[in-house]
Length: 309
Ligand SMILES: O=c1[nH]c(=O)c2[nH]c(=O)[nH]c2[nH]1
Image (cartoon, rainbow, N blue to C red):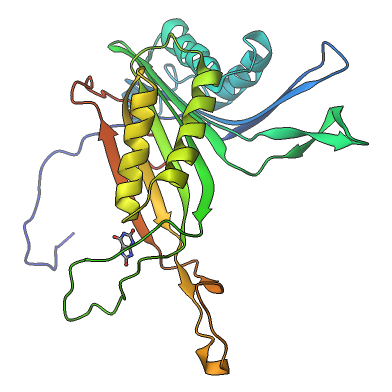
């Protein structure tokens, strides 16, 4: 085909680049019903296999391809066989299985989200087998296993948090387009995504998770914020100080702007009491906080969903 452009014409050989495949977002609910007081776990599990799958791409030869359906079936069966308590532990079991027991698989990544449920309170008592969905945050885990090692990243997302004072934003750089007014008292709100990289798999996953979440919330509340950037750094620092098993914390925070609404037009005073909660656009502030001696992250952050974007 002729190239109508005057730019460079490339004639190199076409080759297959990086590739991976798996079953995304298996929605698995596990009920523990050994006693009348049932337990529930509710997760979304994505499996992803890495290795030499070039024959499938180049020749349509499936002899090394473990179907994504088999990966899905394994994820469901492991919810019974291995149990589904800490999502990090369950992810480790799945990843190790694919790498150790399925011959062509050189690496596996398991990404999990957990949706939490609280026992319904009926006539003043917690019910044995009815729950209401907790909306507070989604717990996350990403486990990678390959020939070079094992990496576990824990985390949470959708933690919507707001403070009604204790936040300022002033002294910022100004140019001819700057109209933003300085403030010494504003609402600060965000929906936090925080991920933390472990340096070991010898972890009491659930209690560490509880500690980290508590630290995130208390740091957000108690740091007098001069910017969301500073708050993120302080959260990352406090989490690392609290948990020596972590090398690195990554944070992403949309600045959910709350603009004091102009009531002066109606002769009504608005002393930081009535706000327009704007949903977009939003500032998006992201930061990594790590120890100076953090080991190399390897493929810890090499995500499955969104990998090609
Ligand atoms: O905490 C903030 N950081 C910014 O970088 C920024 N930019 C902005 O307009 N408002 C804010 N707030």
